[in-house]
Image (cartoon, rainbow, N blue to C red):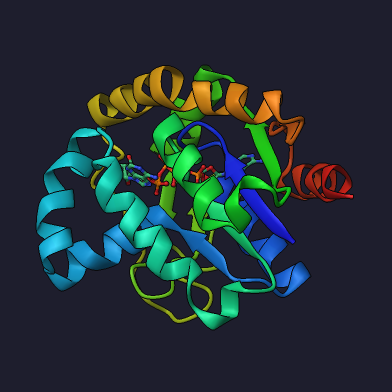
Length: 212
Ligand code: AP5
């Protein structure tokens, strides 16, 4: 199964992609996670990406395409994968066609629909584990113990790009640069639109049904 998740910031791509990946035994490939790791390690990529991410802009296409080309070339991605956060521009979508089966192989493209007003509330209360990447929400998906990861006990953190100004810019980037990607896949009849509102379990069931 080769799946792409598209959705605005905070629409639940990471939350749902982890579950779908576990359910189908395929790797969850999040370009946001790859970039955050590069920033934490202080690599050349991380140094270039850090200020762009903090401001809510998009990292240049050529860098992102190189990352995905390398990652999809690894053995574990041969039988399937779930891409979370890529492609985000039409240029990235066109290049992905070339990387995956020369544009002939059908991809399952899931667009999570969540209104902008709900996004702001979700992101303000998001916390994540800096060690294992687990995602929490202080109201909707709180950890068992205050501000501590259920899985490894690490102290939970808010993401540096979750400021109000950066979230506004990320939403703007989504509408201007990523929405055209949904039209690109609609033309191919690969797009499945899924309501991303309501409890996490309900959204998961809707996604599962859309993948059949
Ligand atoms: P990335 O990490 O991909 O961020 P994003 O797209 O802004 O998405 P988020 O991670 O913020 O949200 P999500 O949809 O995963 O939601 P989550 O599950 O956490 O990218 C970060 C940056 O990297 C970009 O801004 C860009 O700079 C760069 N980048 C990455 N890929 C790139 C690319 N291809 N090209 C160029 N640049 C790129 O959920 C959010 C919160 O809501 C959580 O607290 C969660 O617990 C809660 N929640 C989840 N589901 C529900 C529900 N059903 N009900 C209530 N709360 C819920």
